Length: 192
Image (cartoon, rainbow, N blue to C red; front, side, top):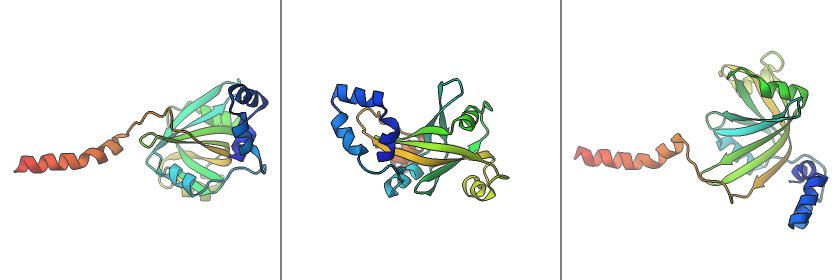
């Protein structure tokens, strides 16, 4: 969390922490080096299991923009302990994140596991690669997907957030897995 606190805990944030009584606890997190945070096994596994995340970027107007990204679990690839990547598939063709990253490479991501009430925040520097500009990374991340580009994100900071206000939600895939034994049992009983 040292990289995260170095970036996120600005003087105004520190003043708010002091005013509200949490500064002492967070000051401990800031002690140490100035190296970017690393993804450990827990973070890599968590990211690999997610089927969506949210990414914020900032445009030239200064306004933040948040975009939802989704896919099958594993669509976000952990390339190493500082780098993740995901294929950028054609959507509404607004290209806001692409344009924002071209002007300012700083992004913030949040990955949420709603059923288990866990979330991971990442601060990163993003770049895009195409099949032509980096065929190795493009092939590794996009594979056979009809991707226009691949976002490659160099992690600067990370922070696990508390579960206190995460409302449990379940994807269709998760609900199906939960109710399938019940459906199987109903079918068995009806067959009798």
